[in-house]
View (tube, helix red, strand yellow):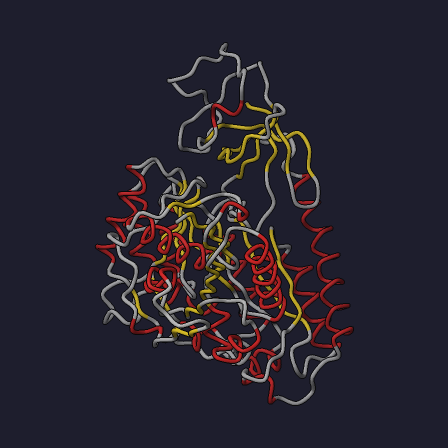
Length: 467
């Protein structure tokens, strides 16, 4: 059967989608790029916040339209949306043939075959499904950045977050298995390996103290010495000196810290279930990172409109953003739902107020981002080229730009010097290339790192030419 896979949501969902694809390819199915050519469609959904759930429903309805008009005979919905809304979702979407929760992606072949009854919901305990391992069948990513999911679930109980309910308690993979997977990816030519989990800094808490994220990053850096190693989704309470030293001491670990803080007001953080720190703690943390790790890039995420947030709380958050001057910052409006603990809190903020606060923060961050990017003009950075635009340009990223969530670097072809494809961030010419070699087609270097001199900057993106 020809299958079209529509992946929505975070990088963790991407890994689950790759696992489903690998499982189905083993049994003889093929995957197509155009949903109109598919005999079956899988929509792998997200439901973390209301806009994500709405996007997932819109995608399902669009695929259902294609099913009614084209050659598609089966429509399967997987992931967080069916796990969260369960049988209610099936009743609302009769066009769908089967719903698979987060613990049922390994049953996708059964759902596609038509063995299940129409509209069935397969919702086993997410904790019952085996963890991904090195031997898990996954489709080889066509994107230069490859993801390694090191854990499932989360033991935290943030009042606004549904993830523990959808994914279960924390379960960590063994470091030996992760190290082998990282080595496999490196041997297959992956130029960047991204370590992910719900809270990567909690990695190993369930392994009797035998290992932690710092140990794992050091292991990954040695297993893939020519690849960039990046980790995402850290928690501010778990960024210790050992982790900072590990990042500092391994040149191929991106000095990039993705640490969502959500807020800085002590009162708001307590209501969020994140009461272990406050603004002073967070300012000290990010200052310590910058002090210990040269060229550290800082990214965070904040929320506006959480129940009980006052204008004074918001002003404190704004002052924090002004003070810390993050390289990257994302803001989103609190998303209420009756299955969240935070739904029962008093003092819900009107939607228009929450949205206004979010927009004010993003306007502030745009100014900061522009100033930071303009300061990079004239500098030379290693850039991983990811996409050929076929117009003499390519799209890539630096170490301080994570895939999907940050800006990009647009590279214009130049005939002055050939790119340096070495793995470090120096600007010296690689011994494998000649300074006189013309870079005729920049597309020849997709999936490789070259050195780029930054020539232009916008609020979120950079432009440059090969150094």
